[in-house]
Image (cartoon, rainbow, N blue to C red; front, side, top):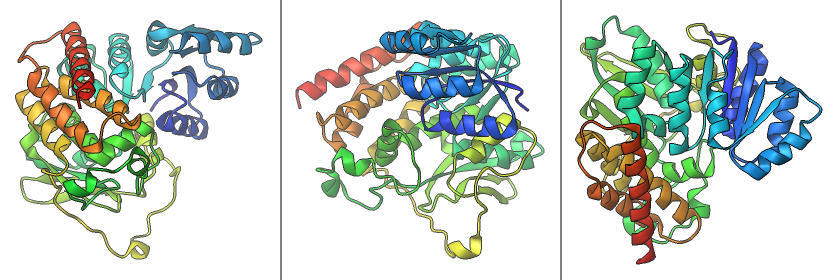
Length: 384
């Protein structure tokens, strides 16, 4: 059970809901970070009175210093300030909901300080999985997944007396807004269309990742690290209703699933209060009202990002970091109208193939692979 919490990415979708949970459960918030949303983080700081806050954007941080001059709250800036909040000494748990590769170094800093981690930043494990899991083991740090799918798997595995009883993981996917469409039909879809997710209210980057199914590919890689299983023991199942958040199958072919309404406050609260359960922060699931739950195989040919991610974790080393970096850049270019929807998967695959094969890697190696993949995508996009 979390007593004192540092929230990295407090103004985003996960961060704001994490603060809702903290408010409801009486959890003390000791640090907050954001990118540049001065107005919202000022409101959060005044309500929760953390010891420190940090904004990545330097000018926004200067503005916040003026706004909070009448308080004792320390205002920091840049990646150094974010990392200082991750290390804030009194917090026992750090919730990392920073979007993208930017969350990796703060994750490692939090672990190095012995903080338990409520992890909503999947890119941390995608790009630097071996580094993160090795550091957590060395420091005796617990990592509690916040993604709804990984939280579901984590909860279902409480029913397994031994890890060897696990046969496979059934990782559910909504299929995004374009489920069932062909590549021909996807050729001219717009970012506006891709941002209309049928079930979840998420940030722009993650919503586009859901549309390409890159998000599910990243979750396959994250699950490999979190639950110490190879990718061929993870089966992706499209479940349009997003009621079954994932399931596990055991050696006796029994399947245990975790169900609930598509509301992130459920996995957030469980990560912060584990092993206890408290009154639900969201609505009650009415199966009779739902009536029907549907399932389908994913289309690996049409949504090639999913295939690229499986290949990346199969190869290991820096390939997942390259795939992730390439996707972050391609996702950004698509949202800004500079490439087409189908270009995302093609560019990610090409950038992954261009990565050097390295088994043992350092943080600097991960950063370099990420940078080179982004540069590769930018160069290729310029010639499209």
